[in-house]
Length: 260
Picture 1 (spheres, rainbow, N blue to C red):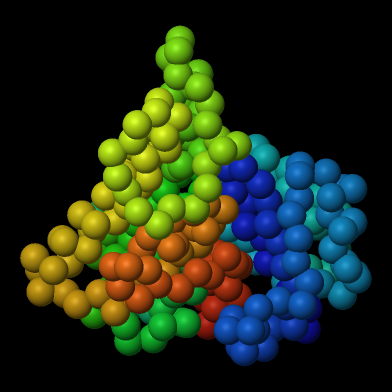
Picture 2: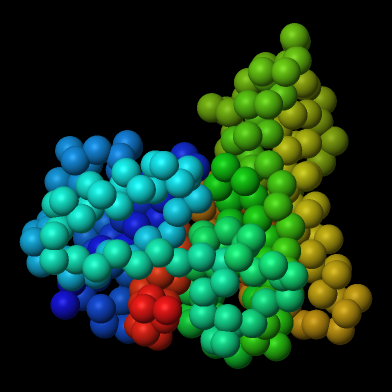
């Protein structure tokens, strides 16, 4: 069995192939990569497409782009079945407090299922650090909800584009070990962005504490996770899972929920 996993995000499309063995969720994938665009040339990067029998997708791009991606995949892999996760997938495996589960982002749902599989029985903060930063809380085997706000890159670009005199410091941003008052404008922007990101995570942790929920682990995923992981390690156990969405897709597939 050969499975193609696709994480179609706002900035890029990540993919991996899997044999379908459950241990791949822990060990990672033999073949993976990134699509720059939704084109047949990109899809040709996938090895042995004729052997793919299941395509498991999480998409937060437009409906039109997702349909285009699905058609290209089915043209190149005619024997493959297409399965697309959404916010309401596998609710009996991981219930949610979301009033309308369908509104939960597919990538967040996949990360939650991946975290639940990897860290079974633990109370976990799941942090996505992409275009948007997302914080989700799993406690007592239930998704209690979360927070969404602009990510590190979006914050830096927004300040630069919407102000006359503030520089774009994006290329200069480095990993953070401490937050302190800045003495230059560039440092002030960088420290301010990190204060927003880590401050929101601190609020989530405080919420758990106030509600007598012990957070066992913070799990980071996404392109900016390396920038804040060092700082968060001083506040409790942290692990980084760059392929958490893809691992969650495989977990969902192995539960046989992808046929729901």
